[in-house]
Image 1 (cartoon, one colour):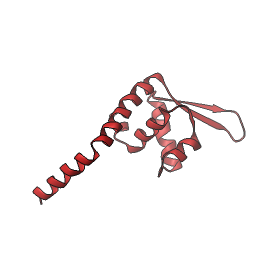
Image 2 (cartoon, one colour):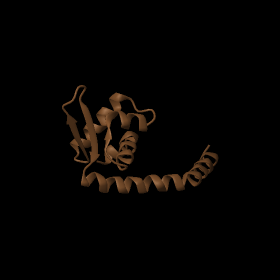
Image 3 (tube, helix red, strand yellow):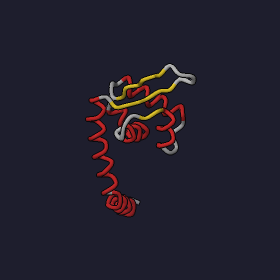
Image 4 (cartoon, helix red, strand yellow):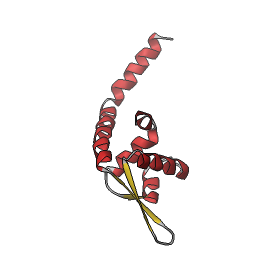
Length: 105
């Protein structure tokens, strides 16, 4: 699971699904820069890990919904807290990096 969290797309998919059930295209539109292939791969990995549930409806064309499992909901809460922390400390992190770069050139 730590490998999964190190992947930027996983975090973005979890944050989006924490808002509720989404169809594949809704996820794709909500996550800037993600390709269909990466979204598909990320969703499959999260389903395999038991974090996301996938439901396919027998329509033409097939429709697919993704939702967090209870385990996924608990993980998404922690990921959202980490994302909030990152946003709140963005400037301080940037300043620390700048200091480091100046001192270690």
